[in-house]
Image (cartoon, rainbow, N blue to C red; front, side, top):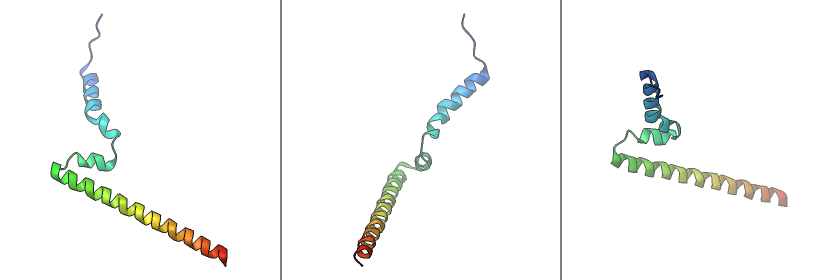
Length: 75
């Protein structure tokens, strides 16, 4: 015998279909969905540039720390 689903069950299923993917997205990816296509490309490039700058700064800080450590060990 086939079970009939209630409207609330169907509504919950629709919500999950519509919003389930958003739970797996990062904040940047979520907001990117609402931007125009051209601005998405610019946003993606800006975000990647920021990440590269952050990685560069982290590497620079690490190099400075290693250099200071070696200088202190020779004193």
